[in-house]
Image 1 (cartoon, rainbow, N blue to C red):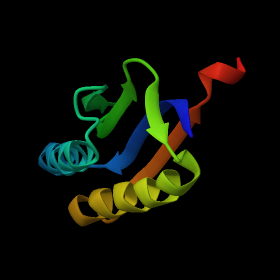
Image 2: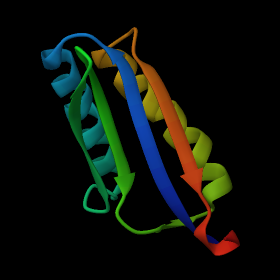
Image 3: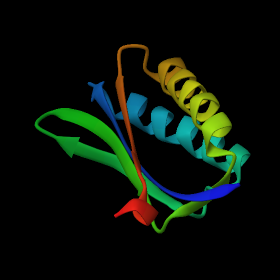
Length: 100
């Protein structure tokens, strides 16, 4: 069964712009591997001397068997970020537009 899901994320705790760009590259690769790279907008933002990588789905993602996909995606997302920026903090927020 498929569901409509909204994805929002913020990666914070990045002190150096080059590291933020590497986080952005890792996320881009993950989204490409998952086939959703054209459905999620994201980028690097400078804020108060620190850098964030933030993004969100442009419209609801249609995910089959979300209950199985979600934990794997979250694990891979965290691994991708930690590879580029070990001290960064990941916040993933899922929206459920069909329930609103």
